[in-house]
Length: 466
Ligand code: PHE
Image (cartoon, rainbow, N blue to C red):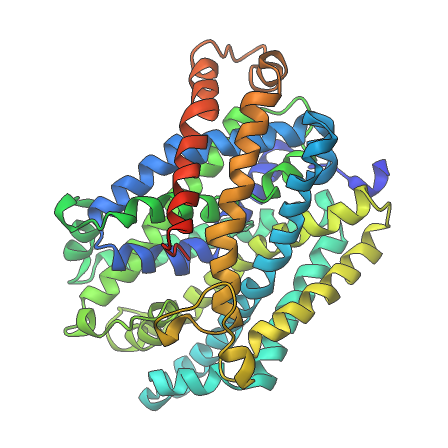
């Protein structure tokens, strides 16, 4: 088993892989969208508080469980707090499957938009191809959808099959620096645009009169999604971390990078949108509208050097999504390696095939297959936009699975692991924890569970955070 499990080659490799998991479509697709419809500033401030008060402590808790037990979520929960907790790990594996099912569909879209932008950059921009109708026709093209998400899934499996140090870490070491570099280029261009000032004040000037009450809980729900918490991804990645490496420092860096990237991406997108007269009013209400309908056109009509930056932007989104799908897949695959004693390669291909079946159904739920597109089960949307399998899985994962998983992880670590055992993981010789350890322990026992319980109660009463 030891050889099948593997290890990170270095602390940097782990940090980049964990940051790769955290930084993804949550930062580039969801965060800008929810910031937009929650009216900016005040929402962003609340989100930052949630990241600091709930996200960071739970990140530490998850990595701690993983590093301590050196096992993937099911085995880790059993070893850390006992057999009765195995289901929390199992829920994580199931959640990974659900998220991967719909996430890979959007990830696949980035490939198509990359190709389209390359075409536009060389042959000239065609406005007829960038309308909402053109997008809907693309989304409803079942064959193409299957191909795109299939391709994405294939690459994901290919990397996961190669293991931790030689696959996941290697890819993260290459892709993350490229991602940061592209983002800096984009930021430079965006800040030179007319709309930059307005964008910055929209994002960073809080006006609490504009914050909808439910925005607070939406911010908290998104903190889980964006940091890959509540489903064991960080337990799994932590389980390949050696005892020499610091949980606290790694968690802090990952959380800081994720937050920085979310804010940078949002600044870029809003600068572009605010630079185009009339665009503010036009931003479509759909969650995918900003990234796939409004932005592609704006790159070619308002962004300086847009024809170079547009393809780079979609490469960035694709890379960010890939390092996240890898971590989702690794949670599922590591379950079969650790608990079912399967060889990695077999586990990876089997899980890839299994999740592809779900992705295929999702990919066809944008009009490709009518009953999947109108599917209405856990969530009965009052607006048509909430119909369909894709929307349902996102709703199920963001509103139920992640908060419930996160809640039980905080309870397990805060109340069922001893103070000594958590202290031994978080406090290293060169790093006296007298300052942060009591604060962390207080938060993980009281603040985080109450905050997460609040989300769950709100969801039960009918609020949607997806
Ligand atoms: N954190 C990823 C993102 O922001 C999504 C994700 C959630 C990945 C849960 C792994 C586990 O896109």
